Image: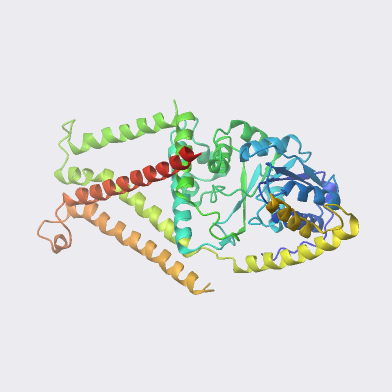
Length: 278
Length: 116
Length: 87
């Protein structure tokens, strides 16, 4: 992952990248993630802004964000807080309203997503003029730190089940021949076996064209965990092009983001919802 | 028609085809061996699908990258960031009850909260 | 690749899953697809149960799997309901 980018003149491209950071009780992590974002955007020279959407954290995340705003400037760090916890999907809609960039980057503020991958996302996007670029933990140099065998097993199993539900059951009989059959010249088998753009359905480190994200958010019905997955599914359905960048995912708070039965059941519910409504 | 209905429709179509061959409903007088192969077909398809999924899961688990270096790198960058942030905001402004760094500021907030 | 013991164990576990599924698939394929075309006095028949078991055994497995999934869902839903009552 040695992607040393010496300062290149990327400012002239006219592209601006808005990073949406939904936070809830991230007082300790927020300064660090912002510092890293500034560092990597500074090195690569892309134009950017960071939009912090705090959902009324009781731990004072917002105060910390205000301090950061003073350090890095109000043009770089925008605060768009909300009064209480209202969920991820609405956080994106809320943040997007205030975003001035033509690209939106979505990531977690808990440092599990490292900003060093953003220049790679941007490069990938430019390579194929992709509508969205998704970070994947399950391909290439991607991976996860801090998962034991049990978690690897459950996660892989979940990914597998989700994949088949979506790509067989959701697309197989869709009336205008499934988009996966004739997109980008790839044949059906390659689509099923290689899974372009869908190796990490539940990941949440992504770069969207702003217009694409707007139309996707408008269509998505699910909430919570299922939201990220539905975004990719809808994107495939609408024939948007998807690029993938391998990312390393550092699960520092071991056990905290444990995949509980709760999460699995809500995935199942979300899938059934998708079935009944699409 | 929702995807759910489409899927049910597709499955019942396959089921009908299976019944036709297995019970020879059209009196095509198929050889006995064909019918014997067709009979456990639904289960055969399920098992092959299950095996393929299991193999994929196993392959994923076996080739999972553990990203030790990424964790180390992050740990070092966190240290670096904390030092840099401390330097930056003590130099630039004062708030949060006097001159305190961002990092300290967060700590004091916690203390204040714990009083209540 | 062998950074730690844990990785080695995980790799072994993953590969054994792959091997297991391949063996299972091959065995079942022979049982269901090949065997009907083999004469009934052939030695191959000694290694397989009577034909009806090729449906009965997966059937039992499927039922057990469904029961497990159902029980899991019920347990999770039941746990979810509990704290709401306390509030």
